[in-house]
Image 1 (cartoon, rainbow, N blue to C red):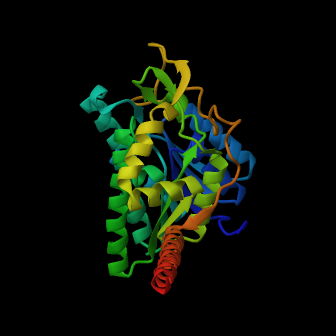
Image 2 (cartoon, rainbow, N blue to C red; image 1 turned 180 degrees about the horizontal axis):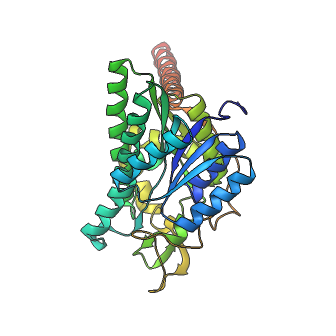
Length: 339
């Protein structure tokens, strides 16, 4: 696997911080050529210099993924300058913390344009490039919140839900056409990224990820594996598995669990100030690093399973439990009859 991506071209959106930056470095370690998209020019130049020191060629694009034409132009440039795009990683996102009643239509629209339509624009550009050769892999960086909406992040959860539906439709179309282009999704748990220091918030407190929290490098390894061996979906971390299955099996119980824990679980003790910068509209300089402020609690490993395996394992477990319960009831009934 270490040499599988050597010389191959990988395009990454949201590349200068958090999961995107960790993913870019992970592919660089394997010798891939990189197309890097983010909004901040200085952060892109710093990342370009870092991967260059690793012997990796790259092209940088200080653009907003909400701009479909700019994303398409970046893809065309990479195809011409670096070679055919083999892997496209859609990762760029933005969010806002706050109750729906406190948000504006403009704020919700902006999150949707970046976090959902940014994936659409990246996917369209990837399909245009890969369609010429009928091969390639699109990796959608998803979230447990694509399956389960939580309080204080309605626009982000809605965008992740939309990506899920968009990707399912695309996948079935490609399958119908017998296409060689593959689409895979990696649903992540809470990750220790800088987004919690620069996301807009209307809660009055500095936001934090809902525990347990994992290091960005854990997500990056999962994304690289998914690109190497694409399957329908991967779920990263036991918390993701529990969140998705819990929501599917008992959404009402999941509601009450979130009511009791998710609001306080997303707040630090520190309060915000009016001068606090955020990256909803424009990038914030100086915070383009891989890890966020929660390194002391960030876990360095996590289980990665195909969604089908997790669902099958749960179904088997439920069936076994039902069988054991049925057997116990049968024995109890038989004993009562003997009496």
